[in-house]
View 1 (cartoon, rainbow, N blue to C red):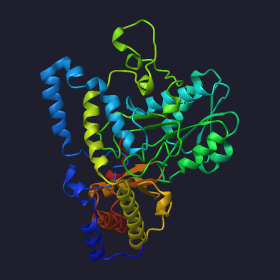
View 2 (cartoon, one colour):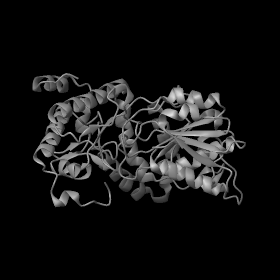
View 3 (cartoon, rainbow, N blue to C red):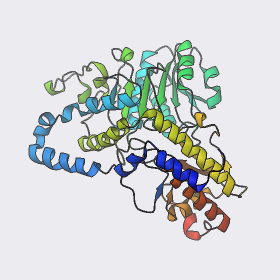
View 4 (tube, rainbow, N blue to C red):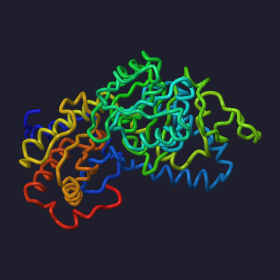
Length: 413
C-alpha cells in the first residue's frame, strides 16, 4: 500500500460501510484495541441482556426458566446463529463447553470413525492446547493412537493411509497465516482421512464456509471475534453426514436421547445434541448471543475487505515509520494469505508491547518474541491504525520500552 495522507485516511473512515458498528461496542476512551483476536470488547447491549436474563428470567421464573425462557434449547438455537457465520446448516453447530473440551470430543469421534487408522496429523506450530489435547487422547488410547506433526507447508504430502484425522488451525495464532481449508480438506479425503478445523481465529473476522470446503468437524471459541466475553462458551460443528455414526467420548446427560427420563444407561441423542455434555451455561450463552447478533448484521465481504485493508495499512505505516532493524514482519505480506492479524517480532517484544499498552495501544505478546496486532473490522477505524503505528514508532525510537516495569513478566502475556 502506498503511503496515505491524513486526508486519505479521513476519506477511508468516512466511506467505511462498517463505521456504524463502532458505537455498538464499549471501549475505554483513548484506547486503540488491537487484541480482539484474543478477547473481544463487550457489546454495549451485553450488560442489558445479562440484567434481563438475571432479573426477568432467573430472578422471576427461577428453575422454570429452563422451559418458560427456553434455556434448554440455547445450545442448538444459538448454535444455528453461529452456523450462519461459518457456512454450516441448521442443526450442525452447538454451543457447549470450551474449545479444548470440544476438540477432545471431536478428535475422539473422528478417530472412532476410522478405527483401523492410528494417526492424528497436525501442523507442528499449531496452537499448543490443540496439540496437548491430541497428546492426551493418544495417551488414553494405550498406544493405539499417535499424534504426528509436520510443518504446515508439508501437511498435504504427509497424509497417508494411516491418517485418521487431520487437525488444523485455519489461522496460525502466531503469524496470522491462513491455510487453504478446501484444498487441505480435499487432500485428507483423498486419502480416506477426516478433516477437523480449529476456526477460533477466523470465525467472525473472515469468511468461513465449512460445507463448501466439505469439512467434517470444527471447533471455535466465543470470546475472540464473536465478542462473547472472557471465558465465553465455545462451539462445535459436526457435518450432518457424520451425526448418525459419530460418538462423543463424554457421554453426559445433556447428550442423552431422553435426559429427563433419568435412565441408568446412556443412549445418545440424534443429531448434534449428542455432543452436548453438561448443563448449558445460560448466562454465558446469553452474552455470546449479543455479539453474534452484531456479527450477523455485518456484510461478510465488507468485513474481510476492511480487515485486509487495515492490515495492509498497518504494515505500510510501520515499515515507513519504524527504523528499528530488529522489527521483523512474520505475517504473510499478501492480505489474502493472512487472517485478521499482523505479527511482528522484536528481541525486546515483551517490554515493547507493555510500553505500547501503557500508551493506549493494546495488542499482546506471544513467546518468544512475537507482538500480535488484531484487526477487528467492526470497531476499529483506519485512523486508529495510523495512530497505533505512530505510537509504535515513537516507543522504538525513544527507547521508551526500556524501563524496569516493562520487563517484569505478568502471568498473562
